[in-house]
Image (cartoon, rainbow, N blue to C red; front, side):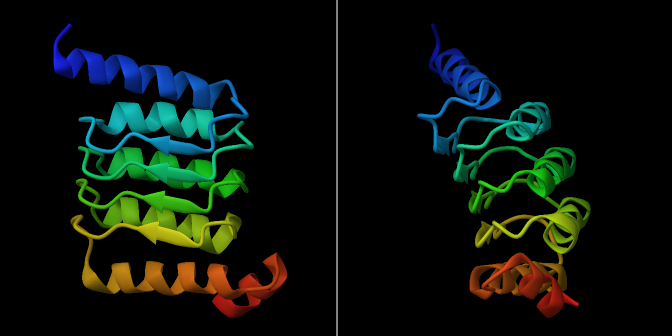
Amino acid sequence: MSLFNARKWKSNKIIGRISSNDPTLTVVKLERRGLDDGDAVRIAAGLRGNAHVVELRLHANGIGDVGASAIAGALRANASVSYVYLWNNRIGDAGGNAFVEALLVGNCSVVNLNLSGNRMSPNLEAKIGRLVRINGTAASYDEARRRQA
């Protein structure tokens, strides 16, 4: 089995564990695996019903706006994920805006969202950073919503 195929097989196995809500899987380490939007969509689908994953390490892959939007959408419904590392992917403003929506409308559990090294505008990166900081310092969901307004 080639190194690429071995990485894909292991990635698919981890994505399956996300989908099955494996209580022993709290940190997803899928950085530098050649993941694309399709893989990110599968991860997002698994996160919707997962209550155990706290940290997503998906940096240095090939995830673009479609995959980022899917993950952001999943985070709107997932209250366990607090740390998301998506730096050095191919995420543009469309994917970044999906995270803004997730942070404004639904999710208050994300306290660290690293999207550096992508293709987003500096103003959008700053806005996301501000929303994440509010999540990290707010004492409650209601306080975070008030401070984001």
